[in-house]
Amino acid sequence: MKFNTTTRIYAALSVALTFIGLHSCVHSPLTGIIDPIDTLVIVDTDTIVLPPLVTCSEDTAYFTNDVLPILVSSCAITGCHDAETHEEGIVLSTWNSIMASDVVKPGDPGDSELFEKLFDSDPEERMPPAPYAPLTAQEIAILNTWVLQGALNNSCDDCDTSDVTYSGIVSTLISAYCTGCHGDVSPSASLSLTSYENVAFSANNGSLMSSLFATDGYSLMPYGSSPLPDCRIEQIQLWVDAGAPNN
Ligand code: HEC
Image (cartoon, rainbow, N blue to C red):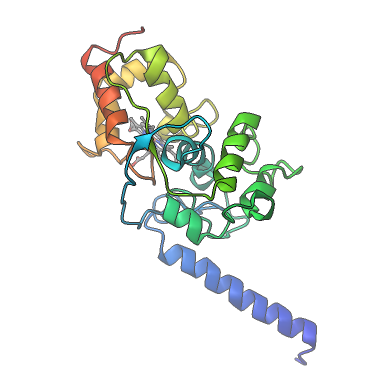
């Protein structure tokens, strides 16, 4: 076969793509469990170093408090459920992995690939893809502010354990960190956590806390990411210990 320029370019491309594909597989401890993994490969090989806590300022979007819950719950679902297309090896489960994936340009949302995907008019290309709902305007505004402010690995202390209720705290945490995968559309492990009854059921049979601590054989939740901040786990624990009331 005679190689013309186009053939050579395609050959080079396919070698490159094969390498990228293999590369993401080699680094994914989950490929054996959830296969095939799509755009967002959930891998956490980072050493988790939590940044120091500061008092929250209203004008700042904090990575740990504001950004990570959106990415873990709305974006990691693609890795859970989607098939073979667009294997780009993008990892959105920790700050280090987001930076390594090169989808965010600190200070410049307009030049950050993350945002192109959020607005794609094709529902299959858009992130999160159909049948999942697109991010809300408020969620996109949070991501935008965070990138504008330099895409820092920052967090702040807004966690109060003195008055924990289901409606005030627990349901908010569950919808921020969990319902992206445990929603009503093909929920992971067939477990929907969108209603009080279901969350209370998991609280009372012990699986809720076990999944947050990765004890009793449960995988760590949120799946594939870092554990919840200690104070968040403590809030949920207090509610469970109080008998998981619908308050
Ligand atoms: C990125 C997707 C994802 C997110 C986010 C997520 N989960 Fe899960 N969850 C899973 C998967 C996948 C399984 C099955 C894991 C396994 O079998 O090892 C699972 C299993 C569970 C189980 C065990 C169900 C059973 O009966 O076996 C519980 C409980 C659970 N998750 C709770 C949570 C809670 C609480 C959160 C939020 C703090 C959460 N999950 C966030 C994907 C997710």
